[in-house]
Image (cartoon, rainbow, N blue to C red; front, side, top):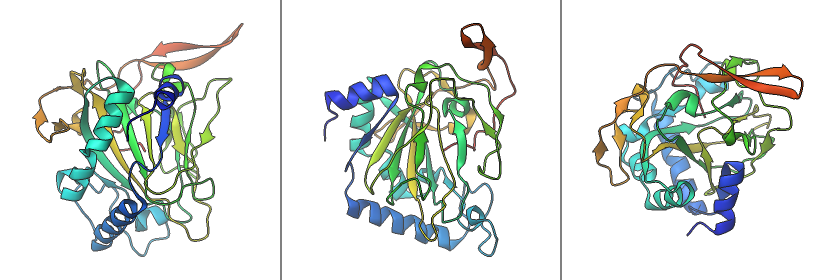
Length: 280
């Protein structure tokens, strides 16, 4: 399914676009069942927090999976899927390289993730990172769909601030400049949201009584990149072969919103390096 001119224009102007039905509902069901079966087996490589089936925290009962493509053939096939590759090429104008997979289960009662920019963690340079976020369940405000800040991909990398951990499983967030605000992205199983690495995004808690909000995510970097953060090596071409890139240095400049006579401006500073595991 080719990307339309309207979809490409939305990606360029707003930093994101949803390609509806890029995968079929039956594809989404098969992937959902596959990852639920893997999660129920217990811990796997890349698990960060471990599995606590009897715990009170829903995210401990169903913690994220990370880098599944390194040990699971189905995950590897998905992150390198030609449909995703074609969409990324059309939207970014660059050949994509695959660097990460993630599976978020987000059961009922689970916290969300505070607003952030993926490039904070990947540090792709030159160029940026990109995300393909596939819905495995219907996603809406009740079960904590993704929220994006349209147009925020035109901002520089912003410095992180402390987040509210009663609402977010991560403890950092980024400020949203005046005149911008997050909007919900409602999706159906098989839809894929593509977004720019500087786009501010996150999600609110799952307040539904009994619904999951499962999502399969691939992170990529643009093919002009020469380096990426160490956590994202090895880097894969879309044919599955490895490409040797350098490791990005930790930290780097980021922007802080500073009030001034016109309202606010962004002042660049150099903060501490972020934790590479904490992004959706």
